Amino acid sequence: MAAAEVAQETVLIIACGALAREILALKRANRLDHVALQCLPAELHNRPERIAGAVERAIVRARPHYERISVAYGECGTGGALDRVLREEKIERLEGPHCYAFYSGLDNFTGAAQGDIDAFFLTDFLARHFDKLVYTALGLDRHPELRDQYFRHYSRLVYLAQSEDRDLLAKARGAARRLRLKFEMRRTGYGELQKFVAAL
Amino acid sequence: MTDSDELDLNALGDAELVAQMHDDLYDGLKEEVEDGVNILLARGWQPYRVLTEALVEGMRIVGIDFRDGILFVPEVLLSAGAMKGGMVILRPLLAETGAPSVGKMVIGTVKGDIHDIGKNLVSMMMEGAGFEVIDIGINNPVENFLAALEEHKPDILGMSALLTTTMPYMKTVIETLQEKGLRDDYFVLVGGAPLSEEFSRAIGADAYCRDAAVTVETAKELMHRKHNQPSEVGS
Image 1 (cartoon, rainbow over the protein chains, first blue to last red):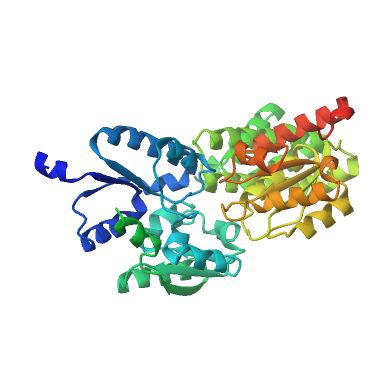
Image 2 (image 1 turned 180 degrees about the vertical axis):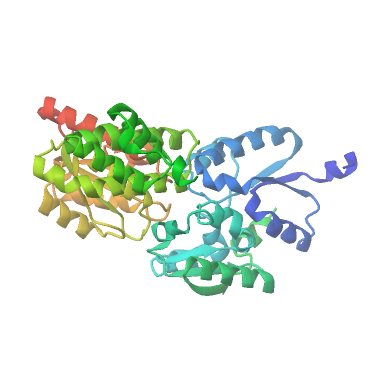
């Protein structure tokens, strides 16, 4: 990338890899040429205790090169560790516990939480990578008998759709079938993520 | 593997058999673990010895490798399933032979949360360590915890949550215990992926337990303290 282009990017979003497509789409839609995106591996969600450290290292590396940094993570099960890092660094993150909440809209999600107790959520990202990040990561490809241990208390798979994509819809339906859960779709769009990116 | 390659567990000496059972537990081989348990019992081993030396020790190794990132959740679940197979054989025998009880625990997942994999592992490991465990399941409002405490009079209350949105309910349970003047009657242990020691302290629990192995060690330590320094209980 040419030096002149680098100089134009004064704001950095450090984001979970699960949000990469959506943030890039919002960046394009809002013509945010001054915003750069750096993603950390989405697989960190399988070891949430490592998220805060990874974000902190990314901030330290990026700090000299940007006027402003934002973090596109929810709390993401870090047990408060991510918020401690961000308080120290005086950096804001996406509000809410996780991407299901900020895609749904925080008020909607909090209100529906008890009613959704039996719901296993997929986003576009998880629908796209269901095989690798859910089915294989949980060992269900090798040991389908573990299905009940993971999912016996769930009754529905709720697909929170960010986009209108027939292929993803089919994948999400297929995921529900393989997990033997009822299928439900809610078209959320980008929810709070849209406001977060547009405000940069 | 062909039939002729299969290991004859009966042909192994006790020490070799126990080592093989540790391997079989590690590999999640339920039938082999059940066979091993039956062979040791047939050789005159006390059920409690089979439990501690073959099963619990095997799961301890599994726990270490899980903690260190060598094993992952699916493998641990398979190991746990294998141990469960052994426990089904041993449980009635342990009851008959009056195996020592280290203490009693009521454990459950809190209201709004249906996740129970971690809780189930803790229940099994605690039982393996000699605790009597009353597992009240998932999605428990405070009333369920209070009723179970009243009925079973345990030493320890264990609460589990997987969700950032449900873990604050642990505080509700602890505050209710405080209001009713019951808090000091129990050790309160909390666990679950999004929790931390800081959270545990903030809500007034006695300890945060990162995993099943830590829960067992913490529970034993607390029981030891209770028996040796009764005046400090609950302090």
